[in-house]
Image (cartoon, rainbow, N blue to C red; front, side):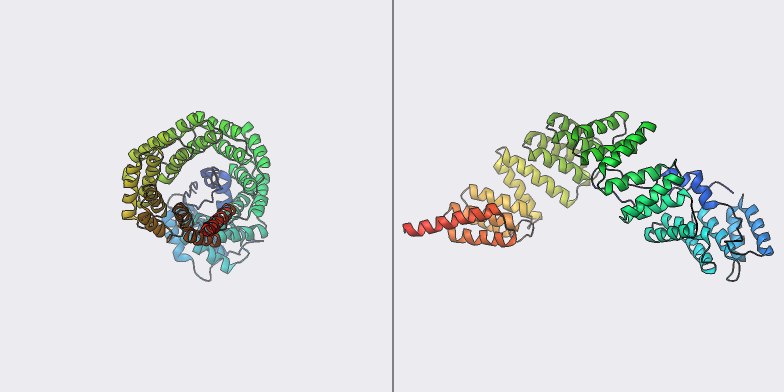
Length: 455
């Protein structure tokens, strides 16, 4: 029988929040001899707990197994003709296993299901069906089938590790942790079991426990990239940014820091106030622009602009433009133009800013932020009618309704139209009550009373 080497890269992953690796089953899991042995076993059957097989069927299986060693497709075709409703579930099991070897996963699942209809307590068919479901991404069914195999007496580490992955993917973290711990006991060399346990600890907020386990693992495997990545995430979650930066720098020097890792390192330096190093790290990240979505890099530009580093922010936007221009979507283009408009406005180039903003609203008539900024520009130019029109249009968008109403009210206060300003601020307090707006509203109401007394 040829060795089973199937790595199913298409399995769905469940990412932990933040910069933490996804808890995917690794290639080592699927190719490890323990998995191959657990799945394949032998084509023999244990008569005391597995389906009975007649002498004729025993002879047939020996013939098929001999053929399968060198001619698996022919063996499948031959066995397909022999399997029928009345034949032993053992034949369906053998056929299902051969289908799996050929990568015919759906047929494999159907055949194991037939075997289980004939013999519901068929442990190996139940377990293998769980693995096939997992390979097909049918996580809930895989978890159920693997659990039932364990209840029937299965006690190998591979099954527990696979069950742990399924449970983790369904966010059943405590059950997943128990499965992974059993997997470690029965399959101590399994990286997937240890990684899964770490991810369970992180997902339940037990970062110190995860960190302790990661430190222990790194003593044995100092080059383990997963451990370094996850350790950095744990340190960030524990509000230890300096230690997190060291962990990420370690990966960088190993040549194993991913583009997402460069952004995480840049953010860490930014939060530590090391802006020059932060910018350098962000620039290294964009040099790897083919690895991450454009929105991640736009976020960096927004950070630079938000801290007042307009020159650096604008330069970063230009680098984004050079790197991604051909891949812009409408939303990406709009976001970049908005950021450029903000920089131009903040650096005194207000006319250029207005030109960009008008360009945005030509293609996106209800782009709230652009409309608010245009309203502010018109207000500064004492063009109150045009400003009102922009603020009113912006207020029609759900996201920018409150900011537009506030800006409109502020402009009306500047023109002493207190009645209308009060109405807008009252609308704001209905939509999004805020203490500062409440104080502002009361001060305007006082101004209105004072103006009427003076009259």
